[in-house]
Length: 231
Ligand code: ADP
Image 1 (spheres, rainbow, N blue to C red):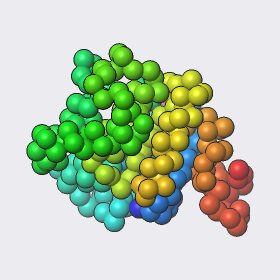
Image 2: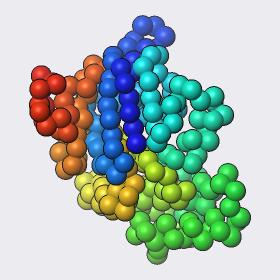
Image 3: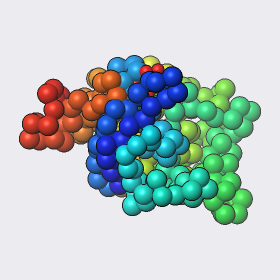
Image 4: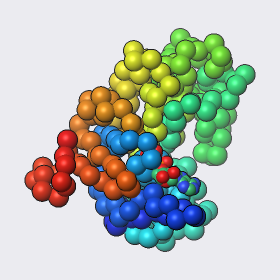
């Protein structure tokens, strides 16, 4: 699903956010990318989500060689294959849960009635069948994040990228959101969660640890030999 090889990313001003990262994630995995602030996690998410191109190295997402695609093709790849969830939900104010989710399908080619039907189905799936007509300000933080997740997966992406999805939530709501992500993963979606919370990461089947733009540990590396520090 994901293959990064020797990926670097430098920003103007000489900051190296990714300093030679190689990572493989198989279809169906649930992976946490964990590290302190400034370690390169967001940059990694942008590269994985094809929102940003690396300075060097190769990126393959769902079989596509990102470096060979034009910007327009990358947009199509994102729209069809990748869902995004962010810390602060990014829902449209004054818009019902159904419409927030259905509007995410605006460019899918589906008719309005079908977009709505799918939105209702996916809202039920994340446990919000009783909140369909609620607007964001009428929902709790955990419920808002569930709407955001529903929107991200309504188009049935094969890859779901979540950037600090529980960062703005109390621990009970955060645990609920994590459960939803686990269920989606169990149903077949590959899920990558970026977090600075070690406790959250520890609850995931695979953890990749970052520091200073490099991977310094990967629990999938069972040999344990590749990194100085694992776990
Ligand atoms: P994290 O998500 O782990 O906090 P980031 O990927 O956001 O890490 O940042 C990694 C490094 O790159 C940091 O030193 C940060 O200041 C720098 N950085 C991130 N984005 C930019 C940018 N757009 N321009 C310049 N420097 C950036």
